Image (cartoon, rainbow, N blue to C red):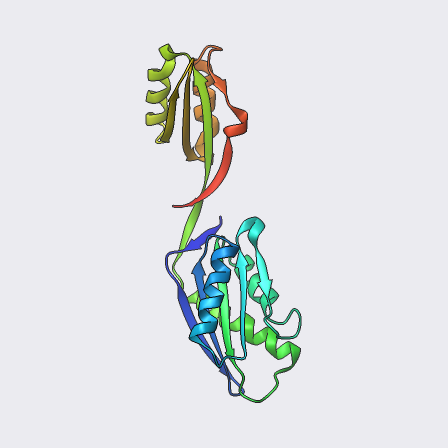
Length: 204
């Protein structure tokens, strides 16, 4: 099961006089992550590097910010993946202490800094939600509303036109059962609007 974070978590390591200040936090996408990095660079103007990694579906990213390729962003991303986190950004601000750590040392330092921050974090499960939409004649609107309420689904939108279109969401594990009940009750008059049905992740 994927997880997000209840709030940011921090950890600091000092290795051969270099300071590694790690933070992991919930972030929606790449634009928000880049804004956060820009803020960190303003807050730490004397830092040698501000490396970061984002695990957020198609917007995932890893940035070494001048460290040797693959020694910072990617190891940080792997920690997030290993912890099954989603919609989470890891950042590490490094103040160089004058002693080079080598590629292996850097990988360990960035991995450990983020892994330790994760240990302090409060993880919250992400529940895969299913977005459903159907159309029914006016005579069946009450029946659909009752079934949706009984299933504990969230009714998001109702559009009245030549037919009634209802949009609702519920945990994906319960979607199949509700769809089967509604299809049976609708007696061929209920139409599922396939293009509007989709899965989303929400914090549980």
